[in-house]
Image (cartoon, rainbow, N blue to C red; front, side, top):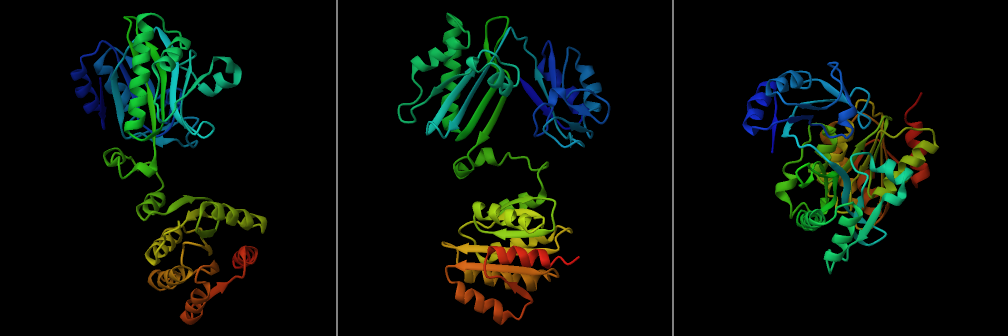
Length: 374
């Protein structure tokens, strides 16, 4: 049983409704390693145990509004806006269990280890013999014998083996139902009174199943995400901000990475990764320019399009519209190749805009760096 609160008073009030013997208080941020983290309030650890509901108020006062820094955050940490308080269970035994999509097996694999409650990466590195894997045939599904074998390898015997086996089967069913790409339970443990419990869980979901899992994706918390990434996703664009001053608008992730590499080769620094995707329209190009131009560090915009599905003419129209609507005042270097490129070049030439044309990727990167000036 658990509650999520947004201030210390609410934490105390709602926690009392749990009527638990002991409570676990967890700061809610999108990063791991919270238990070993540090708040800039001076509080050590983002996870605490207490038997006193009133103590929850004292703890959360040192969490709300303060930054929690862990090994997975920046040095400054992340501000805590929500705290979860849950009924605490004692744990007699800790194991590890995960279900994930695995390229080598062309489908789901269930991974288990009797050494739970710690970093699984350390277990895999130091004692790989304690890592057990069960590939699942996506057509046949998880077989009872495989679930039983894994439960046994986790150290569950007799009636506990049946319990663990049942939990593993239910988790696999859930994995399919919610279109997960990963479900990680650590610890997958045992209470003193003999209950096999999923004590902590991490889920990843398949973005391609968003149309099927609308309720799940509606819960996404974007408060810790770069606003430009959120804005890009709303227009089916892929954006990642960086520290340079040359903005990149490219179609295709591979070409985007190659573009950033060639900018670096010419001693420039990319300010972003932005993939327009295969079905981009003029409106998407305009939104792309709007996103990258919000970064005050950007001094040049490089457009690198190799069109197969994409229509170069559509991209060119988008460039012209963006230049006029957004009143851009930085140099724009454009390299277009492929589908309808002649018409695209004609559109850019007829626009009369000071767009710098490039004949290939190397030429485009070189001109972008030169356009920076001193």
